[in-house]
Image (cartoon, rainbow, N blue to C red; front, side, top):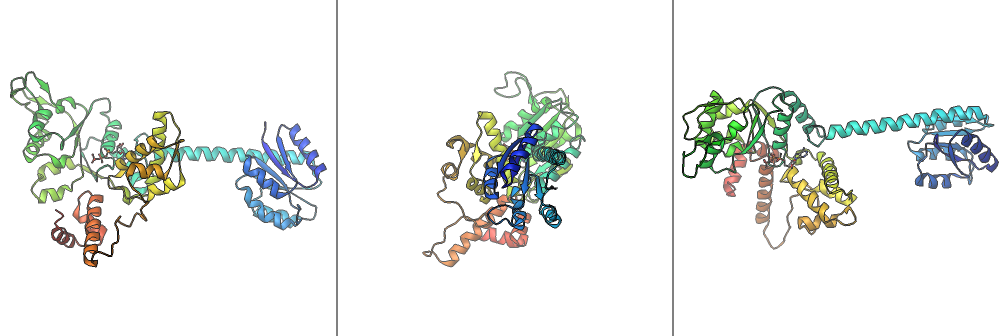
Length: 458
Ligand SMILES: Nc1ncnc2c1ncn2[C@@H]1O[C@H](COP(=O)(O)OP(=O)(O)OP(=O)(O)O)[C@@H](O)[C@H]1O
């Protein structure tokens, strides 16, 4: 079939003749005698072209038809006009019609105009598909980083540029904003990609174990060391060592790590044999390291060593335009994993954008996966979201901290509660960075510090 055409004309004999010409050329044709019926059919079926008379019942006023042509959207419309209706034809074209034909219709002319219009529609569809593909690639590229906000776009660009270099990278940002994802993307795009990517969660390994985990040990080095064990540093040799939550590393271990990074060599616990390694170090933290240095819990020399290039991740609150894209991507991933296509109810889609996500992308993803698991008939609804989040109402607005107004409490108490909630939110959103949290709240750093002390929020 060459294309599907909707022919709208109140003259039945003309419709029959025209349909015959077009079907002989391989098109399929539906005819309607008035615009109302045509629009109803247009809603139900997908047409490649509409061929439209202008003087139609009930009013037979061509201007009325011209004004309504817009309702055929992107589908090309060829209008049929009488001999002295040139200005009407021009009006129709101004209103979006693709071309016009003057009655009486010459079948050869009809054929040429219809073929051109259908070809134009085919090309427009192709462009649309290609654009959607490019857009999709922008949203989720090989880095696995979904989102199309300015922040996410810049992040991708930065990753692409710094990945092939061997420079150390410090990724800084709130929890759940993709720091580990970025570290692994940096490795995958680096020249070390064939070698190991070893991830060490510095906050999860107890301080006294961290040294033997990183450096490895010799049999008999301590009670329980019943065999030689290779450390994570050696395992990462030639590849990338990812030091997650480096801000949590005990000070004593920081000194030892600094030495390894400076010298590229170290002794495993209980060994006299020096090991040499060649690693690229990527670190991540949700702490504000300069503040940690001021507080004496992080060494400035180690900071300057690991800092190299700093990549900052933003909380979802600062890039809300990523939320719908992430929701769609996680639903699709869930669907692929479970061989199930899940639709998102429009109210549920709206709900996601209305929420504050302190746990950022991780929290968003968990909520989607839990709701997808309990949803019925493959449609994820508000009720599913309420069920998995334990909420009973939809919060009013994302800028409004969730709280109850209660006339049984004094204004002072409630203002204080609101202040505490806002300060906590800002600190959480800024990964504990007081300077940025103060900026977000419109306070000076000292002003914020005073409130933190007053409300005992340390
Ligand atoms: N832009 C993104 N696109 C797709 N998935 C993302 C994105 N950002 C984060 N995620 C997903 O969110 C989850 C949390 O990400 P990740 O562990 O990288 O965050 P993090 O910043 O390292 O968190 P933490 O500081 O708590 O360790 C992961 O499942 C990750 O795949």
